[in-house]
Amino acid sequence: MNPSGMHSSGKNPDGMKPGGNRARVLTVLGATGTIGVNTLDVVSRHPGRFEIFALTGATQVERMVEQCRVHRPRVAVMSEPAAAKALRARIAEEKLPVTVLEGADALTEVATAPEVDTVMAAIVGAAGLPATLAAAQAGKRILLANKETLVVSGQLFMDAIAASGAELLPIDSEHNAIFQSLPRDFKGDFQHAGVNALWLTASGGPFRTWSAEAIAAATPAQAVAHPNWVMGKKISVDSASLMNKGLEVIEARWLFNARPEQIKVVVHPQSIVHSMVEYADGSVIAQMGTPDMRTPIAYALGFPERIEAGVSALELMGKQLTFEAPDAARFPCLQLAFDALHSGGNASALLNAANEVAVARFLDGSISFNAIAASIAHTLDKLADGAVQTLDELLDADCRARTVTETYLGRINA
Image (tube, rainbow, N blue to C red; front, top):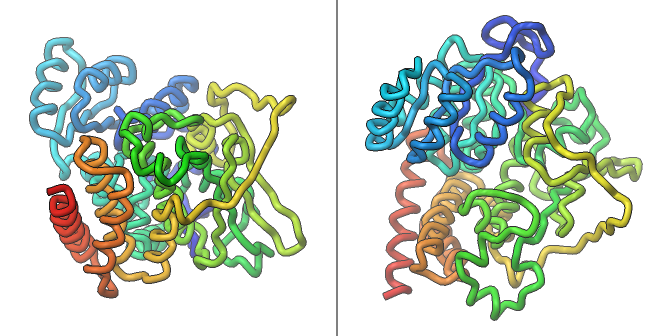
């Protein structure tokens, strides 16, 4: 197994090699979210190539009913008990042959089921970590859209991948672009591969051209109005603050065995170049395409083959591509993420937890946009305290960070 955890040469659990004739059996963690919906769209374009074992969601009962009706999973899981109860009633009413389970343990159960060879990990936030880690330990092919898995538990997760022989394929458009732009035999050794740096592109979000004063007064509705991508509310706010890019920097460190100084960020408002790899000979290889998450999803689902994704071809005529440096003064969250990565230990877990709390408070109108970065900085200053070795220690750091952040935000909002 290579250090980056990618391009595993081992067979998946049912003995089928990628590109074989047998259908891949999927569990989609976070099926009712944007990534989950796009995953099922791609799957529906390839009848017989994929079989859905399980779909999971949190509270969107009606969407889950529709997905069960169309895709006929064997199991549906709702993490919220009330939603599971409502789903059971609807499934019984429609006489669908679907078993309904509930809770965090059920998420792990469907992620590690022996019938499953591929897990789309698309639950937003730290809530997706335990099931995704369990899938890694079980040796599954993991299509990783849940960036918090690596942000919170990078070393632990990559060790699990290495120990089990699991495959890890990135779904974030930026990491998928880097994955496509690296040599096919890349094993996490930058020098051997002739790689100088990884360049993550950022759209700049809806506030890219706003003044600091205007950003401070931004509303939740303005923050979620992303100019290029259709995403959930939380990730849209992260894009507006550039925290999303900061989390991706941390994720890239683990995915590609990169040192912090080997990861660069450039603002590219058109979102056509999804990321780039800089080589020792002066070459820069970029992956480009229409901004549509179905492209990286299809690349990972079909890997190593390329399969149709329903995405329109990129039209470059008349387009202009521009690049600029991120502004750390107006968008301090990006530097906070680099600082956490340099600190190591529990810092990235603290950063992620504080951000989740602050974004939720911003979305419900309780705090200003600038309070997001301020609360993260406060939590890191108060709690960053060194190494963590186990998932329980990481989850404890996550819990403590949430408490400290809530207290801080309550105080400044009093």
